[in-house]
Length: 203
Image 1 (cartoon, one colour):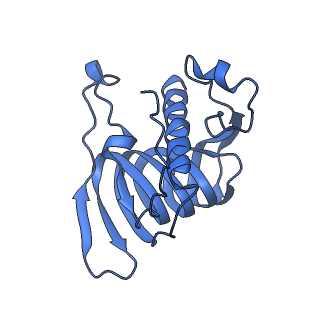
Image 2 (cartoon, helix red, strand yellow; image 1 turned 120 degrees about the vertical axis):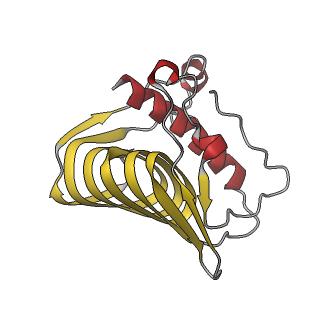
Image 3 (tube, one colour; image 1 turned 30 degrees about the horizontal axis):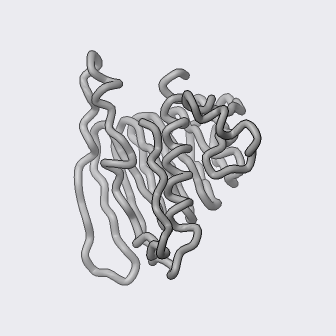
């Protein structure tokens, strides 16, 4: 639970950064599709779109997302990750601020097909033999053992690759891959508006 909470804290900060950059967008970005198959952990931030997961394991997703589970949903738990040090005071009087922590839902032991739709989605799934598809605009980081493919709408070229290797246990936290730095974009992000600068998420 501690690792999941830390990851969701960082996902929240990165999502706030992405939203700030593109909130005043000058043009709409084109969409794309990313598929990933393998075992490990997949983190995703989706500005707008749909995520489909087939398999079993533990799923954590934004509470305001629309989630449909075909099969066994497992044990469902609502929680809100604590804000990183220094962020809580800044958000104390701004509950709707972009950097405010978002309520999450955790499905432990799900098995079957999960379809997640909405905007500003935060998704993390951990399991074996996962089939993961994200459609729309966003960023995905698969860590473990598997393959992925990205196709952008209107383009014939396809980007294929391997999942990021899982760090050794003794250095797991220090070497943990970062979605902000190593995440894979699917679709083309909207054009950044003049003067819109990204916030730097705390690492």
